[in-house]
Length: 183
Length: 101
Image (cartoon, rainbow over the protein chains, first blue to last red):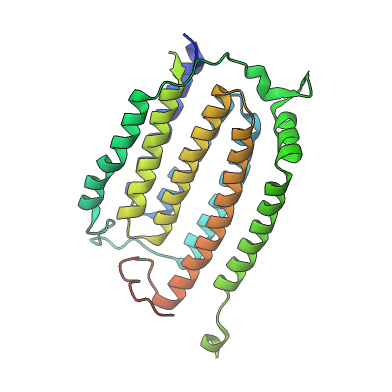
């Protein structure tokens, strides 16, 4: 049968990583303390990065670890420290609309299940080596991603850099203490 | 254990659903932002799986773009968190219901 992405031990490793990542994701949503949420989120990110490594997508996995675990999580923890919120016992963690949200989930799940059961993805020949080929030579995944990124997607890459600049300026402006409030 | 694209679709759907539920029900603004990150992560998982399935690197390139967007979104979202906390002394989104500066 075509279309098998992972077999044997790698397949079981995927199951373990996926189940742990989903468990951590649930813990992110239900944890009352934001610090616990952030740490579970970190665990979930690292487990998903492990799945990327299993799929021979080493560069996205490394970027996931560096940017999410190294950058975004530190940002989250800094903000948690700055706003200094203690979880007050007795206050509710969930909004009053959580039952409606739970009812809404099947509405989104049904189209997904329909697609999953009706769509048959064409049996393509497996070419895992295409993920590391650069101009006919077999190199690493990083070189292959770089060649596609800089040859075919140079404009989106530049737009992404402008986006990051805009986001940085926006964050500085939003986080600034307003002058009238200070005096 | 043979893992096909359908397993990846199920895992990524569940991850997305958990994040979606978190955005809808949590009261803490910070946890809300973390749930958005979970949803972006689910999309990344799909991109990587289809990149492998179709033997096409474009999916991996776009997963890197998604991570970039997630970083910018986190920066702006956290700046908004600080701004909200300065004005209201709370992070509860149910208390921030007045559309006025």
